[in-house]
Length: 273
Image: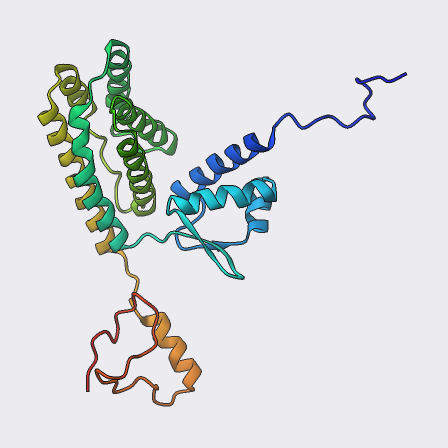
């Protein structure tokens, strides 16, 4: 007689394929945003699958989706590279936010949304100034929820999705730049933002968001100024090794002779005879 409760019968997987993919995407998105997967690092699908305990098929689909968001990109025969944090990326995020976030002036939260925003603003105020990891992560989560509550009232859903992507990039940049010597980026003006939304004051909402973006830019510039990376050194060292101490083939390059160097390397940019 068939006994479906028998321990010798394989149990069905409670998660369907779509659920596994969604879970993998959410997990890897968090890993990228929190810099658990370090900016600029390269990993194979097998390594990611083993590290995070995810199925290979789900990892492959999840990485493809994150690639569409610009967070990772494939490298043939090497794996997947996490988008590096660079000055150019930070600049692009700042400019995009300055152009897009004014759409929040059209936000018109209802009474239930306003009540939740008020709760969040109060909790953000309580957590402001606390630098331990748990408190900081909780505060950032509340700030993001508050902003998304505003965003969800927008009629333009494409703009809302674009805003989410920009905030994702901003969170990752902060995670990368916040070091023991840098201090912690201050919380947004949650209470003032809530009051402006309650009053339907779109101009005030925009002014508060522009102030937060300006503070983000100042924090990012300070972080880049502390970066001791020597541009071009790694590539120059490789060239010296390959040439065994002899003169480099690009020495004395003229305007008609281009040196084959990696994009972004600035040590010999614009060299002429």
